[in-house]
Image (cartoon, rainbow, N blue to C red; front, side):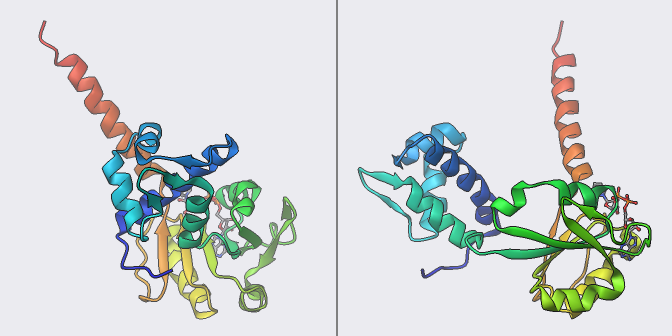
Length: 217
Ligand code: NAI
């Protein structure tokens, strides 16, 4: 499929379309209009049309969108129609929690192994996923065609480890360490920061409170 430059905002919204379309498929819905989808997703119909037009638009006037077709197309655009091999650097609390989550595999994200500098963790398995010593990193990345590394290590070690895995061939960093990584342009970084999300929630809750308190008596 021919694709033009897609804005980051659109890409950010695609997983949500994908989730809703998956739910529609489960419900046995075969086609849906942008208006119906808009009602479900609480996004304007014109936003939906605009977003999906980025990919040539899969809708037809008077017919709407073919749910499974759109679902499959979005999965191709997101690249989740293919398998991605992942490793986790840092087998502590967070690394193990990620390894324990089974849903990633359903989307084709295969966690191949974890790595840690703590010898007490090496050899341990989490849901069948083994913790390896750092010395095995290069060989493992090359032999397992690893594309993505999740960094669940202290922030003081994140840059050094990111550079290391990149030099061994990793293309994407899923960064959980609280640090902005300045990496080569041909490497992509996706930051996941629960505390930043919580701060945004705090802002909203705080302002909600204000509006309640400020009602004149
Ligand atoms: P933890 O202390 O349980 O685990 C960290 C692990 O990294 C340890 O097992 C340690 O031996 C290992 N490690 C340290 N240096 C390493 C290196 N160079 N190579 C490989 N392994 C190394 O800590 P936890 O709670 O799992 O947190 C991990 C990181 O994730 C921290 O930086 C924390 O701030 C961050 N974090 C981020 C969250 C987010 O929402 N982004 C949420 C929770 C934690």
